[in-house]
Length: 215
Image 1 (cartoon, rainbow, N blue to C red):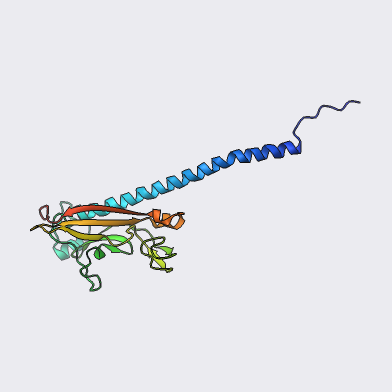
Image 2: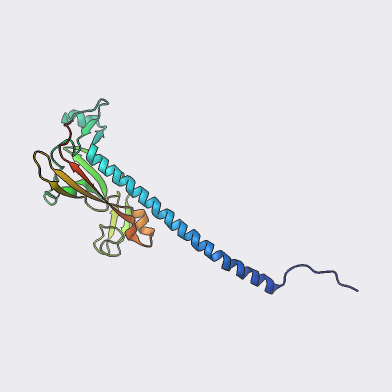
């Protein structure tokens, strides 16, 4: 009696085919991982650029603080919408000064609080973007964020990696030129990046004090 024809693959054939499929798939997974890391890096850089532009815009253009109590109490100049106006460095001949003795005279120290960008004008304040407190475990000085001094834990709520470095680039009278260097750090990217230094970007611009009429 003849046995019916049997169709299918033997176990060795299945093992060989599976091994070949895995070998062919490995380069695809590696390419996918590289692409994901590249996209993640770009997204972090885009966010850093956005935060740097915001900081430079607040410094150079100022803005309005929608707080009617501050307007009434301080007799602050107001815009047509009733906002209290914070003057920019372009419209005045001085920079914000620190209120505490520790940072008095350090130009950039008054422009940051828990990594959030802060631009004061008297009792009025313009603030940069803020997010809920994020605890960063430091590995060593400057890693994974510039604020790290050793192996402590840092609470971060903003994007400014360090105090803006501000120097007077020109001493012409009655105006002076400011050289402003800003460090922006994405702490979310720093915590997961293989190279945490890539989470920090450096930006530079120059402003002239008192170049525009006062508000």
